[in-house]
Length: 581
Image (cartoon, rainbow, N blue to C red; front, top):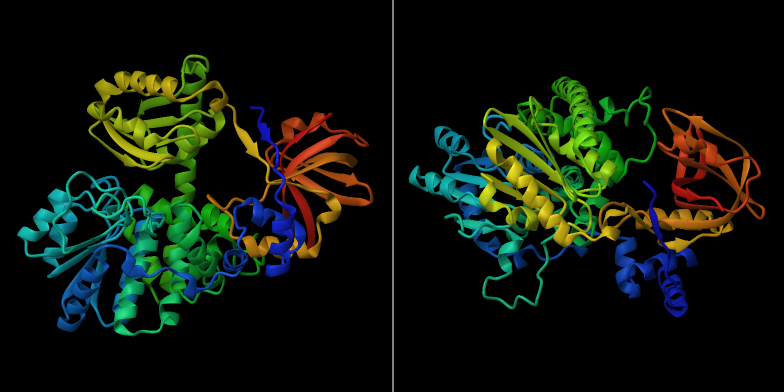
């Protein structure tokens, strides 16, 4: 699908000069800072060099004091504590973080992760009863619980107190808990709603980290001890695809540094099976950044939850035994391969169904359902279809008379709001702007499809259905210097909310013969004046015929990357799109 390019804006040259002088960044990097709204020199310095002391005060989050006090009581009384996580990477890493740190403080603590296929999402009755069976007097949720009104009532009736640590939006009724740590509760709580307090962007594991930060402050413990566990926080935060801004960017930046040299046997073994460590690893020695975690580490952890028992992921993150770590890591690797096979099969079936039934003129939202699809892979399938068809997409796995669905969206369509408009047709739903989950009766899928498309026709304009590339800055190839590459590393990690700078380089000439490499990648070289750089466009082999040796007038939308192959390093253009004159 042809993309619409949104051309770069020109920043104020005076601000650019001041940023370059004040931060030590080169002019092109200072231009990028200005275009991202980082016009204050001190703010830009903190962005380029984030530190633990830049984290906000955790006690700004409501009910944090109450939660910390209750945990201190549990520590002093040697009470049994159960950590109830969710089955995705955010929930399992959050559970592992709390267990590791609380155990280090002397707590009697264990974890429980619900089975995705049997119990579904969130704090479960089985989890509450398990807390009672283990003799726990305190249950702490992570990445779930803010809507668990019935389950917290059950816990109270069994004599188990609950602390909720959850970053999801609360429902109309507050759970009956000792404390509910959820930044969303600070809005509409009688305070000045025009003042947005910090923490709304945090993941579940990020919020668990803030809880531990508050506990460490009250106990007078050194923050360096807590910072050792930022590798877990980074993995869960990246996997949950929360905006990489503010607190999230600090903990991911610092956490990736810890992860590269992690001393946790489980994470080290996982890095090895994923190819990021060891002499034989295909990715060994390459920088471990946001996207390597997102596509190399997170799917392997997620796979065991999608395919069955996510508790194995927590075991991996907690073990101190290297042999056990390698064994569990291999299980995650095997489950991920099995998940990929399932994912591929479901995607092909769903794509054929979409090609048969989808009308791009009539349909604003793609809703697909079929018996036999594995509910653990439909989220991945929905993401791929939303990208391929550039429509909000709902994929439903039917099981008898009910179905479980996963939905993914495009920028102009708010999924949670759309699903709220279909609440009467659903058994349940939850999520946010770009991703959501739901359950529905089979008999209501037709009405749901019609309603979602009606909402889509009301919300989405024709221009919203054309994928766009927002270009950050113009680039002259001679500006690609070691200083610019250094400053781009300082601006990393890149991800949602802090995307990798996308440059527009124009008036280029193709040098040498373009060729297809790997599976379907288009590789070529370009010249501008005296500067020659290599370029690669992934999965663009079908456009091979658009380029020819000596061809002039080429424009590319690209990011800069430092590539290493067989011990040789080179700077190249990773081409997202190109246009010929």
